[in-house]
Length: 432
Length: 109
Image (cartoon, rainbow over all chains, first blue to last red; front, side, top):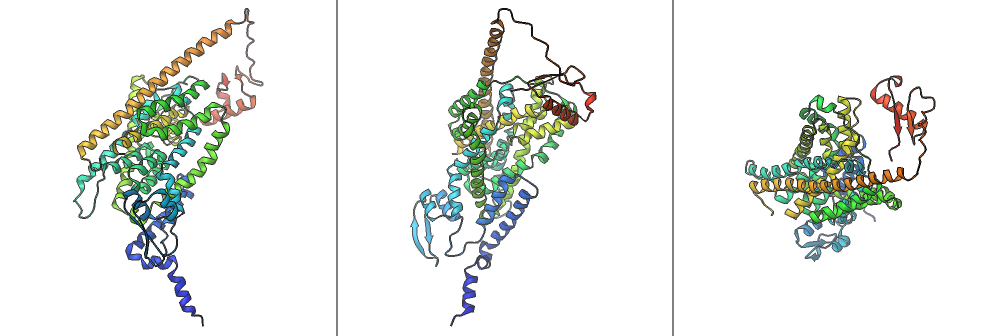
């Protein structure tokens, strides 16, 4: 006779609901909190439209990886597998009954493909540095470096706006001074962790992911969420500081139209930058190389099909893979820590200081040119293309409705991409 | 370089910021030189083109835009596009179109 009660009990025991209750005290509550957080992030992406293309995927990846693993069923993301890969420790493969069936002494990508879940396989692309570089290729194919070429001095604003990267890096290390204040709580960060946090100030998602996946992969989820959230909040974060650091008269300054840039110049530029930056900082070569290759596809005029693919199809596919796999790293036990809170706080500090750095650079240029440069364009030196340039344009128009700063702000804006890549290359060469 | 002290962090931060500026300044110089070369090449080309015909016929004055009350000249721009642009500019400035004076509209390629 079939025992219906036993069947129902088996069904219950094999369900994820049972796993939540069974492991509630042993970290299961953290998974529930993370599921709630992923729903909030989905709300922000869908309703508030905060970087929806990325945040929706990140939130969903977070949701998937926090569904509690059921014994015997394949998890979509195995944190333990990645911990073993990163720390170089042995990984034990368990069967449905929890018995060890194999011990892998050194985990390689092939083991991850063999024993990992779907999101583990996606994540290999992040760990190998593939997705950020492909995203950069798409960014390059969508970027017009014309404004920068017509006004090369705007490159300086892209450098000035990297101030937040290094101040946040310093701040993250300085927090070590607070250690011991609350027993059992660690506030500070190691050098590689601090470098990964600092790069949030570059306001460049792919660069932040690239650097963090190399230096502090355990912080990837928190850093990616902080970076993309603040990039979405640029129209709210930047304007108060723009008004604080500039006078109404300075914001009214109209800038003259810059020279026309020839097609040949636009074609040669990506080649020159690649050679130059890759020789200066070889660690930056993958990022800058892909950025400039994408731009070359756009400018040559003979690779339109490639340019179109990189800008659209490839970019969209990689965005899906990148966002879901980064979101998957937001596992409760890793994410719900004092460190995450500190990262979120340091991230906003990095953003604000980068904005101020760019504005101060703009003020210096305004003085040196005797009022020919509107200092607002300095704030666009944080990457976040083209959002930061749009904000500079909007603030300029608020001060003077006939002021059109967009093309002038695009120069520092794209220079910021190069600047943050150089900053990442430097940090990678120091801590990598 | 896992655990670093505050002093080391300060030095690395300053050095890093300086390296970014150094790299960007070098790049700026390269771009400036590139720009100068291209501008010089373009300047050289222009007189060569105009000097080629022995007796160039005086260029006919550019026709004003159809229906324009003033002296608006269109360079490679369709009248429809020009009308749209003027309307956008008037809207952005918050001023009536008849109070604005457009001199020329050029398609920058």
